[in-house]
Length: 508
Image (tube, rainbow, N blue to C red; front, side):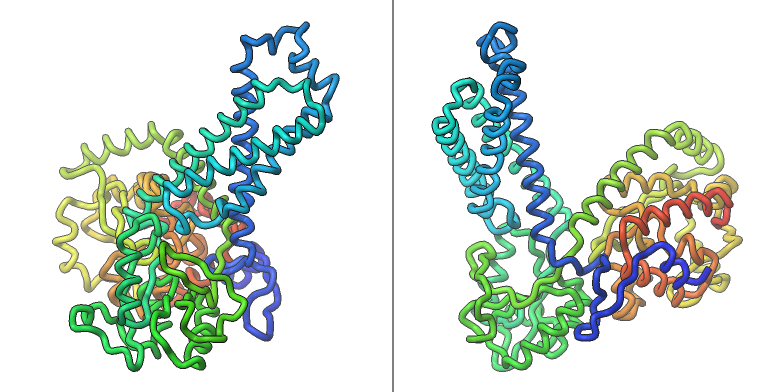
């Protein structure tokens, strides 16, 4: 089946906007959906609603000693709901609505980079107490004597504590991912002057911002200092090529440039999905009516902001965690048998770990069952002339370094079972481009780097469509087609087809 035919059957296509060339109504993996902030806020709101319900349950259980569960008590659950169902439901909904509106007013549903941990905790407590006061006023006006004041107080206090804990856990989790180089936003700063240097120092000093500095670009009339010349990646005229090469998510304009040049950069950045920010006092008139957003202590104005399908990626991660956990649990007996067979077949370790290049060029350790002799890497030079793939790929069907057990493992892709651990850790996804080794990436052209803009996967469109095709161009085009037309539904289709491919034993 041709690539286009497969994608037409398993993806949703929409016509292109003739004005900007962007696909209308479709979801792209890198930059679509102008409702990013709306979806993110909706997920946080859903979490707050869940916390309030849990807090109410805790309050009910904690008020047991006050006769809440005695059938003859006016505070019994059935008595309250049967006699005043509207009042009880109204009070609960009012508290939820108040909490949501106040939290939104305090910008608690925005990116966590816009505030530090202590400030966020203070705002959370303030939002809960304000919502609690609004609830007390509601009960006073509605004469809600049937609702126990003890239940109200415990609900408010428990909500406050749980929300603070949840936000703190989320923040610490993100800090750990930032330290591992995951979920960070790569940035390039245009200009090496005082503002640019201060901005770099600020972003590198505060880990909660989640930014990774990649380098400067030169701006005419703003010569780099000798101390920072080594961090200059090129000139501003080639800034978008530099951004793509270094997987930049945002460009900060910290020096004055010609307005027409900035407009050109913004237009190209829109196509490439790169965000643009500018220091407010620069480019007077170019960012009128644009909101000022603080990055730490630095005020910036976003000239362009790319978007990602937050809900789709959230579902993709949920699917990854669920399937990898399920697979490791169900396949644990097979894992033990394979480990024993490898140990008996040839000397050497059971697992083979190699450095692979993941999303945005991040290096991670990819885990597989060892299928070759222990000194396979040293003997690679001996069989380079047997390579059956073109371009930067390397593959030998009858590789003499492969062991007897290894040949069976490769045939049915059993050697890749340990990669479920990589998926569980967040280094890989179930579906995506295969993670390349560093030697391959060194030979990539600039356009090839696009496949590193997304999370690598255990399987992908290339594996189910052209696994035996030796063409490197086919390899790249299929990965690009997957990235351009990604959806959760397409992932599911590829996973189903992968089962058929594995069962047929077409691996090598």
